[in-house]
Length: 604
Ligand code: FRU
Image 1 (cartoon, rainbow, N blue to C red):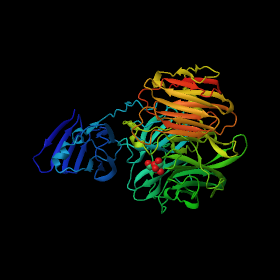
Image 2: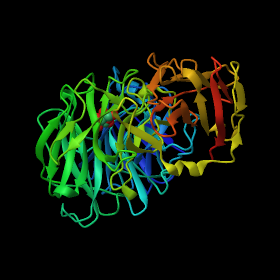
Image 3: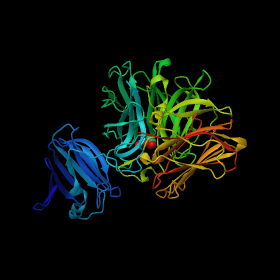
Image 4: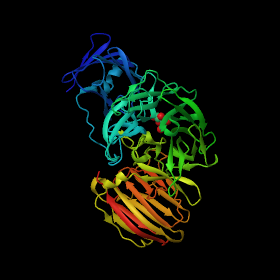
């Protein structure tokens, strides 16, 4: 238990919080400044109380007198929403000092002493990460705690998928960008690892990529993992870090930054171009709405070769998180290049989205097949962003993950212990659509099938105008997959509705006449945390056959509707106050025929 002793003998007021072993001493220096000395006795963590609406405090962490880390945190003022841990055991030194500056209008030191956090800092050997959230997905990746945005730096090596992500370890809103880390052997079950890269004097650690340097081109060893990321401070520069333990820990390169471009640029994404014996890097020149293409022999010295994008596709928002890759064209022996460009705002239904360009790449320059007026989107939901691929994936796979949120409301979604999940992994290829154009196909990665429990077979035939209803599984809050094959005669419609006893529902429709699939989440549950959340999203189905095969994945607070052949995908968040219990299929104009429908409980 904490004892909170206040000594007022001296002008500088001091409080000593004794824990079971170590001690914390707080010195109050002014109404907006306190110093905390930590004498830990082997405790692993300092637990810091957070109140999301409290004013921001800025902390400088000094270890043995040297600046180790700077961080921003909403230290609890009047109540505690949750605790976050500051790691003590990973620091190199004995004496730890936190210099805490608080943004607030306090007029006296006594006011500062009343702030809740001054009584509730705790030294501890444990930090409880047991889930407290009903909206935490069960088979999608989430951080154990704290805020997450982009998946980044992902690579596969020796049977392990390494996923890093934009992480705030000190709160569940965007701040203190660092790289969190998780690993998986099957792309489904993720193990939380220690974070790897935290803010340094060059700035926060924004998105980037990682490659396996098999031939030691960078000089950090054969098979070293080399990461490039954006150091974000007054400027955005690109820095290198390497790992010789398969991505568990990274060391920063002494010559950072390795790229300092004169315009705001970020999210370096690298790949190996064997044909030209080069490394290639694509960098988003965010405000110029274009991507810069660099090459290198050693991952440290980069030459700007070309630029692509000004005037192309959607130009409404900043260009971010690019990814350039060569993909097979289904049904042919051809391959084409695809440049993925995340953009915010400017997506079809507002806020963040993923556009892409199909074309050719000669090792230095990307040339788009389409004119600048054409925009192609990868997913037509509101919650699929910052999508990039794993490097070094086995069997030539192009496996991607997207962040399931939207910058319009990502900080406001109704969770606290963590904020945001990643989408299901998807496999990319290209297909030729009835309009003669090449588009991206996104299929759900095959590993997900292993989650299927005992199939619940539903009726076939015409569901009628009123429709047929089926009960969704109840285990694990009803997480499940619905697989549906239907024929829509003469341009008719098929409605698929998820609902619960509260009258909350998600209404989906395949409209064969207009060639669209849509999802309406306006009455899906909690929606009023942002005026941008209620929405109807619509995707083109690229289907001229009348036969539709669709997979719908429900995971507590997310719905991914993905055509079985990957021709359209839609990812939307939902926050039902209780799980959806029923799925109803109906043919409003009588012309739909269900050929097969199966509900699979998913067992995480
Ligand atoms: C995309 C993004 C990136 C940046 C990161 C910062 O969501 O804005 O451009 O690197 O998030 O967290």
